Amino acid sequence: MLDQIQMNLLKEVAELDALPVGAYNIRANGESAARNTTANIDIVTKTDKSGIDIIIKPGTKRESVHIPVVLSETGLKETVYNDFFVGDDCDVTIIAGCGIHNCGAGDARHDGVHSFFVGKNSKVRYIEKHYGENDGEEGRGKRLMNPTTVVHLDEGASMLMETTQIGGIDDTLRKTVADLKAGASLVIKDKIMTTGEQRAMADFSVDMNGEGSSVNLVSRSVAKDHSYQQFDSRINGNAPCAGHSECDAIIMDKACVLASPQLTANDVDAALIHEAAIGKIAGDQIIKLMTLGLSEKEAEDQIVNGFLK
Image (cartoon, rainbow, N blue to C red):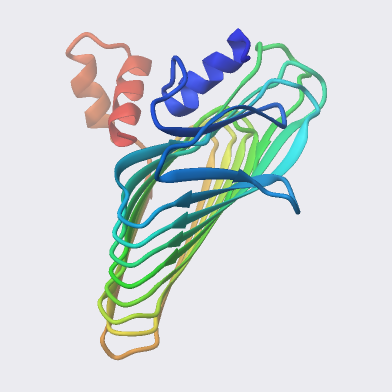
């Protein structure tokens, strides 16, 4: 059973008011709180380390898997390994995410390592949201997350990753590593906002090894107050392929944003492009919204919310 705090976290990270339909594994304070399997999707507890194997049968269509994690116990630190084995010719949605409510003096930390083995011609939509909160009192412990995502795409496979971290996490290193075979495609849409003294580092590395493979990496971020963000990306074209990365950031107050893109073409027919922009909110945008009756802060919030959609 989940308490009210845990249910609120579940709502934030997975938009769940109750147990979902289909396959799911809900983890709370280091333990499995609820699990369900289906005829096509099995979930098995690992025996050698903490985590689960999610096994999706070939040909599975229009099914989903929810695997959210919630932490409400101060001082809890855990590392979890989840492996996804997606058979050929599938079309599935996987919803993950982690929420931390820390009202004690100790740090709470969750490190999740998710590895995807996606079969030929399969389609996967992967949604991951990170969220943190406390009761607002001084001297509370930090909320820490370090997710790692490893993606292996077989021939003709495709994956859409939608990752979100909008405030609440004090320190994070988010790593994504992927390799693509012929005709495979990977799209990553990453959104992040930091406030206060928060630090967020994102590290992306993609190898396009097969002819006709492609990657499109789009990162949008907002850094406020004295927060720090670092964006590192490496796209390697090792065959005739197409790669594109885009890093757009709004910087506010005394924040700092560092973007370090890297493109490597190891094939004459590798077409690689990077775009990057870091800047403050344009004054004329704020003025225009203020003429409609918004305060300066309300205008800034509207612009930020629109930018991160």
